[in-house]
Length: 202
Image 1 (cartoon, rainbow, N blue to C red):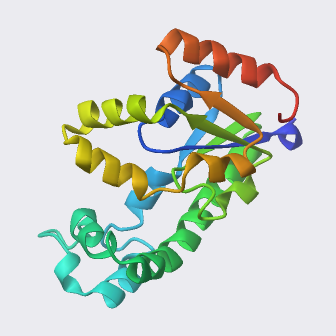
Image 2 (cartoon, rainbow, N blue to C red; image 1 turned 90 degrees about the horizontal axis):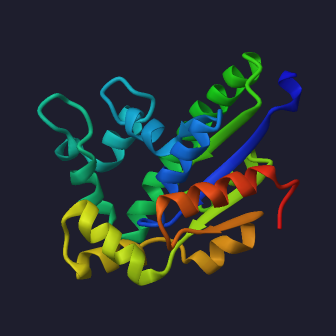
């Protein structure tokens, strides 16, 4: 029944394996909404955040197509919390509306399990949309190695990216289920299936 639909809020720091867990959940029949990808789309020219972001940060953040260049924008806000908060205040409510619309569409189609995957699930308040919050974690050294390999960056850059995010112990306060992803894919699949079979949280 459509009213029996469950919403999992899925989050985890960079290098934790959050997106891999989302893929495993999709393989198990979940409808996955990637809030970060939804976020990318709102920056396109004509997108719902374009006018407000360009007004706030200037035309210097645009690329040759007139879309907002997220790297140029990141360079402005990355080291300035005031500007980052200003950007989030513009963009987060717009992304939340888009995600809510997709949840409603899924409910209308009788989908039983929806996963909202978001790096900023806790910080943005989007966790409130979920019936259950899953946090994916991994040891710091493992995460650093994954980030360096995936993005071809130095350990210093990888550390900076990790340090810019909310620490796992703070996120854990909001989590119903915590999955530690220190081992291989088979171990992770087993843990995800185990978590799906559990009733409620921890």
